[in-house]
Length: 397
Image 1 (cartoon, rainbow, N blue to C red):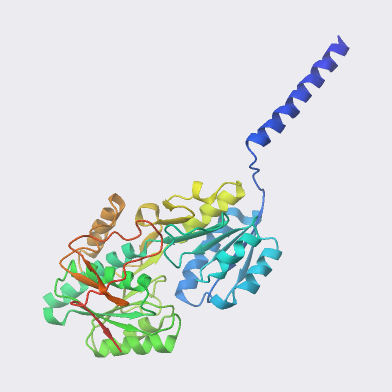
Image 2: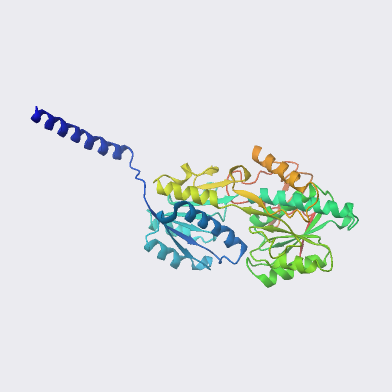
């Protein structure tokens, strides 16, 4: 009897070994108990863009605690990416996130096939062949821009109603870094949001030709205010435009609409509302995928374009923050909520739409009649609307 029990036990052990072996052949994924994660920033956390991106790092630390070791490199210029990238790889990072636009990331990824490289998208990724371990992602920023435009439009409508300005003085200013499609898409969505409330509104755009210069951005905003702009927004990386609005408010009426980071602390009297891309949903999901040894795009919730992902309000990738109820026009929150719900239900085909003709600044023969709606982020996370609505938008020096 004892001998039979031993044989039975050995048989069960052998079967167990065979089962585990077969399971690993069929299901090779092995969950990790800990990860080493790298973050590379183009600036530091004193700038709104990088600060906003760093919130995702904080969310990872909060969720995983001692399960993760996080290494951070700040103030890394795009053309200086290679050295910190290799250092993080040599440190044994399992996944590395980048908020810069360097082509080097994609080029170096094949050298480190066991590391996942996740970069904020910087070009049209539709149909682009990339390494299996290279991924791009971005929130659909035009949605937040449009909603913040509605908030600005409500304020301008109030100013007209109160007799502060007349309808023909409904002028909006925008401090922009470069004339890229990402920037053009954002400020066009913004002015179209404004015009959904104030049909006579127009926009002046001033390019700084740099992503991050407090002096240039503040100077550009001051010039726009001198031109008569009553609302200023931006797609640059410093608090300069917000400060310009706060200082100008001492002698006149001007309001500020933020991007990436709330300006309520530095411009409490003029900061109206802020839209931000939320990097947390993607980055948390990507970490979860690597922890479980799964392909990132099978875990992330969004619009999947191969190894590229985007999403908007419906997945929490875009949000509005700090509506200033002290200065916001009556009904602003309700108007914003209505537009956000439209985005959650559909594809945003009501934004780039109307009786407008857009002209490609790089190729005047390339135009888009917005009587046929333009669908942004349909096939790629990078914004591609690259048309100037010249009848309502002016580019100024």
